Picture 1 (cartoon, rainbow, N blue to C red):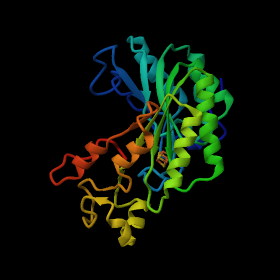
Picture 2: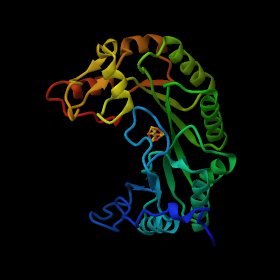
Picture 3: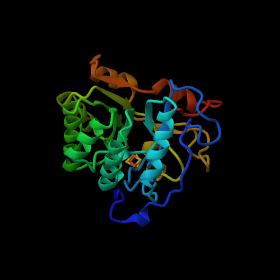
Length: 281
Ligand code: SF4
C-alpha cells in the first residue's frame, strides 16, 4: 500500500514517542487518559499574531504515526488529541493519513484543530469514519477575504453533517478594527450555529510577531497594551486588548452560543509578578 503523497522528501521528521505511549520517557500510566500524537510541525499560513506563522513544514512518516497510535490502543487507550497546530496543513497528506488510520482499524476517539483552508468532503467523511468527535476551528478577524469566510461556512456545515462537534476558537479586537467587523463575524456565527464560539480579545505579543511591530510603531495603539512593551525580550506577558469584556458582553446579550475566554486570566498574567498567559495566544 503506497500511503505517501507525491513528494516524499517533505516527510522528514524522525520517529518520536507519543505522549503517554510508554514508547519513551514517562510511559503510559492509565488507559483512562488522553494521549497526544503529531503528524507534522510548522505552518505555511501567515497569521500576524502566531509564532508558528510561515515556519518550515515537516511531515512525519504516516506508518510511524499509525504504529504509535496502535501501540497505545494495544494498551487499552482509546482517546487521543492531535498535537498539530492545524491538521489540514496539506490536504493530500491529511487524506493519506486518514485512509491509513481507517485501514489500520483502530477504534479511537480523537480531537483536532483545523484552519479555514484545505478541506473537502472526503476529508470530513474519513474523519467521521476514523472517530473524530471534536473539531476546533481557528478563526480570526484580521483582514480576510470572502474565500476565508466561505471556508468557515463549509467547514462548519461539513462537520455538522458528519455528526462531528465543532467549536470555533475566535480571536478578535485587532488594531484598526472597526465595530462592523466584529458584528459581521458574530452574525456569521449566529447563522452557522456551530456547537460553540469561544471568543478571545487578548492578543499575546511576542517580539518576533508582525502584530507587535504594527503596535509598537503607532503611539495611538499603545493605550490598548497591557504590560511592558518596552521590554526588549517581552518575556513577561504583554497583551493587546482594545475590546473590553463589558462591551463584548453587551453585544452578546448572554447568547449561549458564545463564550468569552480568558480575559481575567490574561489580565492577571500581565500584572507585575503575574504567572504568564496560559491561553497560548
Ligand atoms: S494560527 Fe494556526 S493557521 Fe495561523 S499561523 Fe498559527 S498555526 Fe498557522
